[in-house]
Image 1 (cartoon, rainbow, N blue to C red):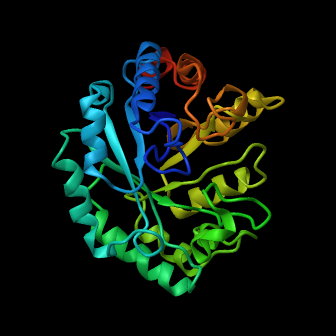
Image 2: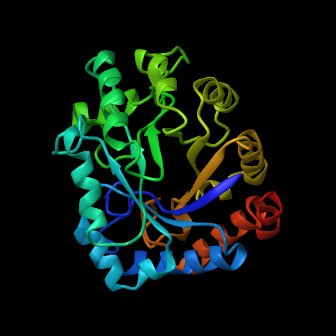
Length: 303
């Protein structure tokens, strides 16, 4: 069952929202407001969550509050990777949550937190345990990123690719399972922290890992998951068939679905991080996905 709709992903990160197109986030706020209204019209009981910010920045929340956007949202999300990319200590997690709580009364979710095994798998294992100690009970949702390593043949969604040095290659080692599906040490201790911890796992179009992922999540005791339905992917051949398969496979979990990624032909610039020329089209996509996978009547009947 879809338990929440998340609107966009890391909107204050250049890899996911182009500041050259929208330097003050006015276009983002307008687009997100339209999407939130469209989701509410389809299912007024479905929580609407602001896509996880990265970096964690209270001034960004204040900016969106000034646009009136938070009046249309039910929760805010943050992302943190203190052992890989952030310039703060893992022990600062409670303080980072409190920084956002100080500027909003909305619940604060942690929709991505993770530690790569790039340097050593033992570091990831320690980091998982410490993260669970610091965050359990402090956020309504804690999505560990991620279940699988990113396949080496794929690209990571980031700005400068290999020019980032080791920062880029860490993207490929965030899973508690290796690319071939074998478990790392962190996977062996993950059940100690479920069901309090959930997972964030992005499934690519026609992702070959989907069924194995479901089996692994059940084995690990995971009850809730964050994933995405890509607006850009919706223009691929047989996109709805893939979306249907993905959502049916995940039916036994409480799923937060992230709606994001601009189709190149609809962007102000031809890139997934561009603001769309017609934000109403993104709102229509969000409404269509909620109507298909989380209609109000089905949710009410389930409750």
